[in-house]
Image (tube, rainbow, N blue to C red; front, side):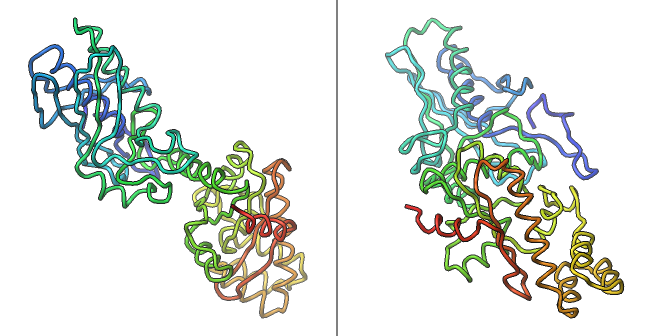
Length: 382
């Protein structure tokens, strides 16, 4: 663990979790260490790096190789207690002298190459994001300013584990081929960061909007994706998954000037949306049984059935009680109407919103007002 993070922990679900540092911090530290060896001489064992978060790290260098015109070394990624697939990989920087007084940054082996529009780097460029590029540039510039070398430096970032590791990331879905991305906006990995997950949804959304006609097909997870594939013959790679972040997904779609968004969800998730709950994780709110019971009352269900719904262990079980009373459809009509109203309210009417809701047992349960129009627009995607 790099010094500077030793005592830095966050509390998640009543557990203390250690923070780590990003691939961007690894690349910047490796580049700085290699530049120091190349321009100032000697062997460097640790590099001090000030991250954008304002936390100063002292990161150990590994596998130092020195020649007259270039130096190579690496930093081992430490994600702390975050379940990051890049944890433990080695991020190398090869630093070479060039005659022109500039700093060039490129990706080598194991660093992905961008193939689609919508990412922070243009198609054809290495997947080294804007903030890590700035961190590398600043770190190397600091060394150049302390030396009497009048030329510039080329920094090649690479990792031997990158190609295999990338298969476990979002990169294949994002059209980033051949390796991992060098990422990080703060330089620090916060364990189980919701911000990082929402950001990954936004990145994929940008790509889909660039490739499409402004309309998005979204599901919370695999249940919805499987239903779309089975019922509508649409492959999973055409679907954006939003996890529990229904509200944030709508907000991002509005900010990115999308024209419409259609959700397809199991009733167990979207029953919460009928109550205005826009983060459907159980730790944020539940109320599934209560919302179904309220819809049941409005549909004319008797008190005994309402009690059964309130005591149901799952949403599917609660639907059984509605079905046995012959009131499943009116109850679902009530739920679907409220889902539509809440989605539209979250979007402030700036984009068309819609939803298809289903059950594993009863199949299609209903759809909101603009759904047919949204399906039509989605089929027109280029």
